[in-house]
Amino acid sequence: MDIKKLANSFARKYNTRDPFEIIDNLNAIVVFYPLHGVRGFYQYFQRNNIIYIDDALNVRDKKFVCAHEMGHMLLHKKSNAIFMDSRTQLNTTKYEIEADRFAMNLLVSDNELCDYADLTVSQLSRALGYQEYLIRLRYKDYNPNTGR
Image 1 (cartoon, one colour):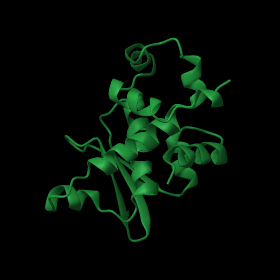
Image 2: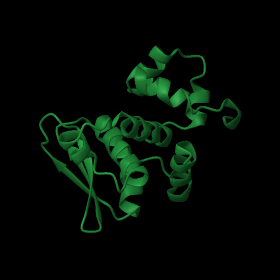
Image 3: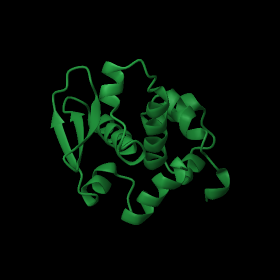
């Protein structure tokens, strides 16, 4: 599955890159709760998609966590990451990277990267408020030919 195409298809379909607006249109449930040490997680329970987000996070982090968990919802629906993390020796890093890629492709368009083409990764990280790791991950999917 092409993660960038998937993120962009949802952004086009709902005319927004705001994960909360998209999630609302998908009839998923978002629960804000004090999670103490966990930023968020996704659960598929009784045919409901539920995203839990730590209510202590700032607005930008809540938006990123929502987009990240939406990535799990769309890419890994049948995977129980909580079970895999806590009960098995399986490495879930691949799933986390895919969810991060989905989130960054949803939140930061190629056009936006094109607008900031003269910035370094560090500068762009500060400008957009995302960790440098996430900016580098987003650049892996960047195609400057789709910009303005």
